[in-house]
Image (cartoon, rainbow, N blue to C red):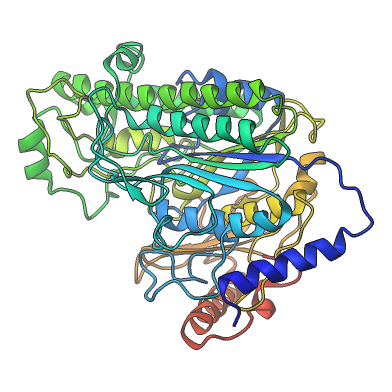
Length: 536
């Protein structure tokens, strides 16, 4: 078993040998922009009704992927992104027992021997805390408080606790400002080196909090309600070529079972609150008023994140590096139906969206944000795991404003970036990598092949092979089978008609899951036989 120093030394030696007598071209920079609980179709360029001019310009200058997947939850998605492994391989899902195994390595540790300096700013939300042991970032602004946007009870700079922010703080802006700060230092002191900036925004995760001037832009935007908005988005997305499925109906009997109890929630927030995804026409005028205001705040949070992304892109451009920077935008899971009162509680007399309020968009608007798909964050239905994915790289991607339909997953970003940096992931021990480089898809749609994609979170399970997806909800939920080539809204269950296929997929899911458990618990060296050649 190699320790961290030995691992980096081995990686550096391997890379140095492979580059001997070669004069490599200037390596690309990497910028990952990660949203938190943003729905698949929230952004304008994905058919949404929210103003996202910077994301839209990125899409027009590059690629939009239509079948990118997360893990359905914040923490495990971040783990997949930074390790190239499923969260069950290294005990990084909150439902997976055990500590982070010694074999776990993070993306900056693969990039450093390749000459990169790495920076992180924003939310962390992983078992391994940067700054308390380190994962290879040269600088990190680490936001540990997920319950407040206008202040922080705990945030750190390079592992050192910072004082509580001064009035005027807003986390989305602060995250971008630290990113710009790190890039300016890089331009001054390390201009010859390529950089990796991981910018992990907290928005639009609950609580719904945004500057009032941003909220005011959306005062009347969502007055028609979620039914009309979902129908309009579905039509728009179909015309854009993003989807070719029906619009999933609302599911009023599905809600997050750890929510604040209904009676308590309504007592604290008021009679305008609603906890089920019911038809908009059944709401009272008071309910409609509160619900459209909540969506206005959600939209304001996304627009602010878009604007702050623009600030970072302007800094990269000022450095003369925009053409040679691979920019990736994605969301860690689908929009959340969670309705929880945490943090500083909810003051019903305070302006909605201010620091003294604590709201969630709820299942009605979450269903709209995830349209046309089923359900929300924490479920492994498409609404919980489908992520927008925009990729821009002027020097490296010739295509402009094109779609890519290749299925991909958060596990793919580590091998992709290391591939483009001119190296190969060195795994001296442990289970190897589940992900694979998606760089071939940058040139041509349909360039990726993979044996399967695996999902497991909060007792919700799924496996995708080709276009067939097997899924089960909860501990004892039955397996359901869907053909995603024409039914990504998961409406026609084929399990009873294709029992053999369903049984085969169920058996494979269990074999993969058991294999990950054996690796964690018994330290087995590899699950290559489960992962197949070339990754998952």
